[in-house]
Image 1: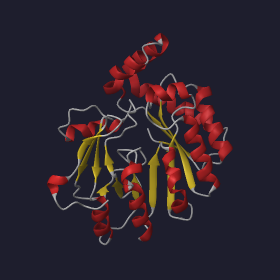
Image 2 (image 1 turned 180 degrees about the vertical axis):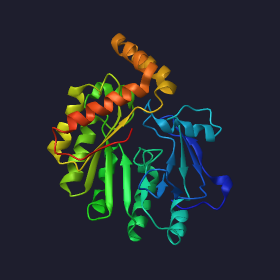
Image 3 (image 1 turned 120 degrees about the vertical axis):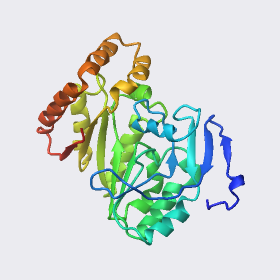
Length: 286
């Protein structure tokens, strides 16, 4: 899709899933990144249908004047490819795709901005890192498998599908993600598992952490990145509503919220101790 020169004809509609799709124009395709080791971020979409209840990117709604809940509106940067082509002639560095919204969320099937951006970046031989929790990334396997300057991080917060549905209601299933990880690795693509956020009560116990490391070790993941649940207190109300059926979990969250920094310190030590039983590089991001 290319830029529609008539600004008044940009689409703003409700799709068949009841999600508002708003086409917008971006000033820049590449934005300076605050992530260590990354020069630029590229996000074809703002807003994410996955509706993960822990998502840190929901603060972006404050930059807009939308009334919809996070996950109910997606902005599509329809001029992204044109802007990217112009910027690549002037900029150099490492780009990370999907820092604030999953680049392979379902709307990508319609607009294909992620795929087109990848093809352009590869043409200019840019180092690329992709962050996603969607099995849709396999659609682009043919253009990814032969590109050497690439790393992919697949989010795997839990191996329990019931818990996945609570915290990531519209994201790819656990089995779909496991399959995607296996296939990417089999194709020789540098693939890491992003174990994050580590969900208190549901995936922070030793046996649950080991489940992730066992799977990573079995499939040959290059690395396991571990991160805690960011902004727990600001997300606490909605999380408590979702887990109200489990009194022990509710009590657990209320307890750790009183000293979340102390909780994270203990969690960090637990991960380091467990990781020593595996021949896997790890990075703890909290």
